[in-house]
Length: 550
Image (cartoon, rainbow, N blue to C red; front, side, top):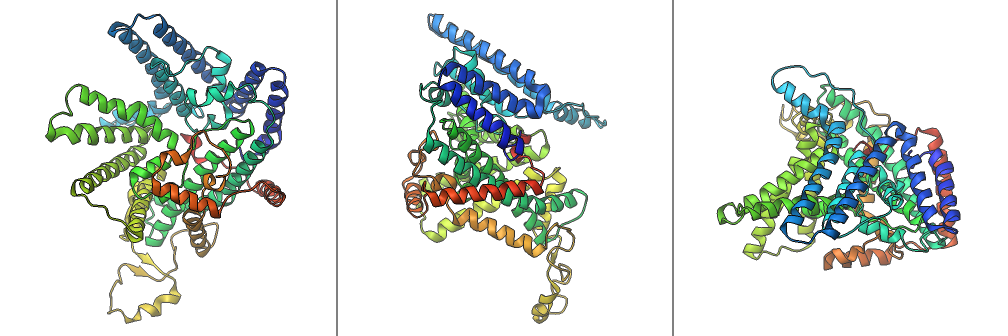
């Protein structure tokens, strides 16, 4: 079920909300069960055959969680008991990954193996269950935390709600049990809170507008350009950059809209989700980008993958020799981690290329930071910051070409166009401006056939350029949702506690100029905006969120 659909807005959400608070007034346990059952309906509306798979995954992981907890309580301690817990955890994680691998990666790995020997591979007819990566990783994190003694869950009903909680089930954020369950266990969690409802609905409506007016409009630019590249056409300079920048903005607005809608919906039920998106395009380097983009995934990967890999290398002594220290403590763990991040997004060579590029970016960034520290360089100033932001943004846009393209060949075609190797087309009206150039200068690379002669868009090319510029202005010039709602506690973590002094000052300055207030004027504006959105939804078929495919 889509957040941006009539069934969700006018049937599911009102019934779930009314039922939760009505039942919660009499029984906290029954409200938990009601919300968990509603979340299963939410999942089953889209993918009903896989509700049994989801329930099987929940039941199996709940059993393993209880087993791990019992082993920790009854074991006398020592290496033997730790090894036993480790074996149980290994089996549990292996089963989760095997199920995920079957549905998501069977065709990819078997196809790669078969085609490596020159044979043609016919893909198996395997349907990918919606949100399988998210609910699998969520439960693996739970099992690891139980094995470490950080959390536990005795109630199957509460565990079911933790996994299926509908605001995050399909596309995140990735939740920690210790993050959410203490909130759901509060006696007053299912009590009517007017402020939370008002703020939550405001966030939801603003994010819905971002999805419909920006992300969906930008998709009308992205689809034709990338489709023509996949069909063998070679986009010229403007066409390639328009398509690439439009996709970067589409993904930005689409993913941020989903993350904010999830926060708003959850806040209506008095549950605060973690911040998952914090103006990543404003990052000054790639390390900071990943601290701002899909933040829950970044933290998850760092805690459960990158750190264990690094510790394993150190434990066997691979990182102790000075001449190999950087290889085993930075380069290999970073590259392995980002290849897995790429593969997590999908079973395609393009996603592996995306992960490899970001791993390469991160390694360069680490080395640059190390060199600055060693040489005691502290470059500062607005110009340096602007250069860092621009360089990071261009690097991210290049990597996102692989993220969007259907194949590596299509991505390379787009990058070739972005590099100007396919030539440049300009409007005929500007041809006299080039009259001063020497005869035949650039004659093989510049033509005067319009900005985008090879593309047929649903809108005027100039309109497409204006839309991209508008998107850039919003990204760089306006506060994000967290800054806009700085007066209210909307997420589980305080952003200011995890950021530098400079970023805290920036957030405070922005918040003093732009901060949402609960008043009649804003309420009327949000109500009118919602009406406009409902009308807009009637004229266009609701589109899925891009992260639904992961």
